Length: 95
Image 1: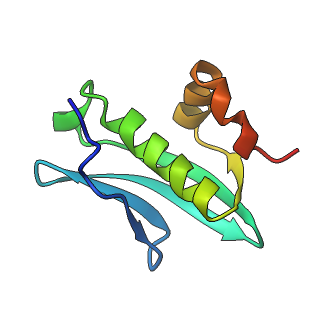
Image 2 (image 1 turned 120 degrees about the vertical axis):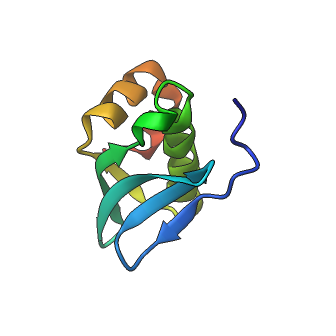
């Protein structure tokens, strides 16, 4: 499934990146400090699992992080696995 047309929402009030797919909310919980963003937890509703939603929200979050010149600190196990599969995003990691 293609999620390119679904907008990533940065819900700063609750420190979540959100993606709404078929009325369901997937999210990444984060914290920021200075120019660092800590991605803590990724969650996708059971109804959407296995459809590429987690990968889509992570890619959209990474594009946001890059556009805002933030440094990524991955604390979420899913994001750590994603980075191993997509080393091109290592450019966002803290040195």
